[in-house]
Image 1 (cartoon, rainbow, N blue to C red):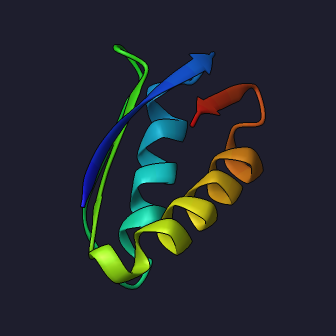
Image 2: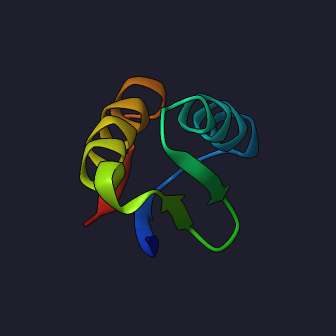
Length: 72
């Protein structure tokens, strides 16, 4: 399953890279992109683990960049 999610707030390119690298390590994640310029987060994960991967991704976002909100 692939989903593009809007982001709200501020995020720097460095933090976007850290978030992307952390999410890529989650089990079942096929591809992830965090774009600081367009404020979009794209998550591609296996159907069976997508909800869990998204939940863990939200935690990663809040831990690394609390000023950026993921608009799920």
